Length: 130
View (tube, rainbow, N blue to C red):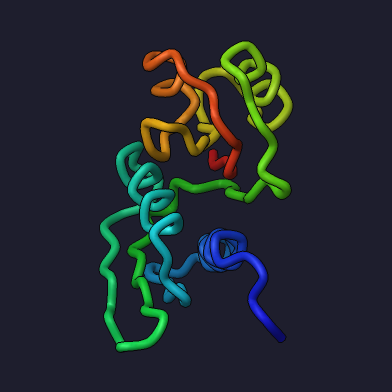
């Protein structure tokens, strides 16, 4: 089969490995969007360090898991989200206002919903994690 969405494959394999209680997971193929998404997750402490392995093909990522992640997923299609709609998306996707993040791709880069609100920008929705 052909891979249609590298980000969806990556998040699904992370979520499955987390459910199985694994300490590490190997993600392939590697892409810039996946790396930025993982950077946002790592910044909030949901995953540990990750290492990009260059194999002169599509690349691989080895992610260290911490056991904090409950669920992560991709939103497809990537809907346009204005600044006023961010609140409704977080209400629909996340279990509570206290934790979890919706990830957006904006003109300022790939940000979580709180940072996007601070920078006063909307964008397209990529996914979520909590």
